[in-house]
Amino acid sequence: MARCTAPVNGHRTASGAADCPACGGRYRGYSSYGSYSSYSSPSYYSSPVSSGGGRTSGGGSSSSTKPRWSRAGSSVVYTDAQVRTLTPFRESVEERASLPDLRDIFLCHAWDDRRGAAKELHDLLESLGVSVWFSEKDVALGTGLLREIDKGLAKSRVGIVLVTPALLRRLEGEGIADKELSVLLARDLLVPIVHDTTYDALREVSPMLASRSGLSTAEDTMANLAAKLAELVTL
Image (cartoon, rainbow, N blue to C red; front, side, top):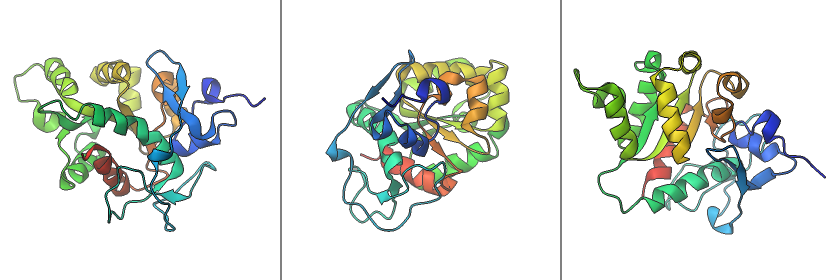
């Protein structure tokens, strides 16, 4: 009988989740207590499309498809594994749709990335009409940083964490980024975006975060990932 690779290797990126011989396409991701569950539903997908949506790696599914939340006429295409990864977060977004005054996305990042990769992702998302909680603009001088972070987390539909070499260094030091992640992991509303590093490197400092299925700029461009996140939170 095939054994699940998640307890040892994690499921890495969305394509890596599809490689698990036991779970394959059913993997949903670890809960805040480290357990995992499976699911399947034909409503996750609309009709497949023939063109590719970006780079793929790791031997995962590379066929292109459209998720059920993708609007008619959208040019954004996904791998099957990306749709499986994002579907639970879409369900959470829909469940929280009636709550007032929510930002679409809380962006967790390392301080060192605030004017680099984090700002790039923030700007791409906002250019697509996504409201983003971003510490660079949402924390005023003289205010309590941790208090503002708590408020931002409570008023966001979903959280994304930009995993970079700088974030890994911050996590090793158990700084503010680590506190943000603890809250997001507990809410089970966290999408890791791995950039310029690997899940193997992440696993060394945060096995819990590394166990979550996510997206990677090794498989897709930052602009394409931003477009997919924008569709994910658009109601």
